Length: 224
Image (cartoon, rainbow, N blue to C red; front, side):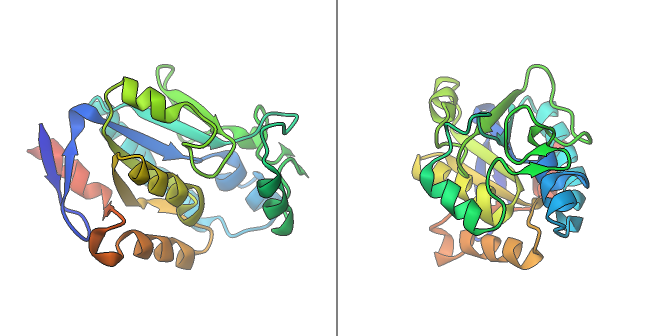
């Protein structure tokens, strides 16, 4: 059954029976006070931390509607063998090379403190936690194949950071033919201006790039 979700710039038809929720990179490296970005780089984590509770509520809603929840982590193999030369240079240019040693371990490396979902969120044992070597979750993973095998056609996306891994995953999902809805109040960036810019991109060109909605529009389904 399809539900019409109030969204921008057009309503989004959501098929709950063939939907999944992607929670992008809500991990200690980005959102924990002792994680690399906040604890070592000293970035302002107010927005990244504030979005955790809205995401928790969205996850509970998804579970209540039997929508599969998939958690992603930007996290490389310990030997960095899955780190592309381009990404290595880009992150080095930015001042935070992948694999950098921080107070709580190496940055963006599987098995480290930073490559865990933040403690305020608790993935269930039956929910997939998917490490990814690129900003888009569809690059270097089996996610596309797995979703198609499960009959998933519609995706809800949330997480951090909006303009980086969330937007990369969102745009790839669209190009792969999935119907994708970006849940804007469940996304965040370290700089709120970058979050707003990413949202503006998705709603631009009259809807050619996709759909954006508030989580409350989804919660309204519970009262139908």
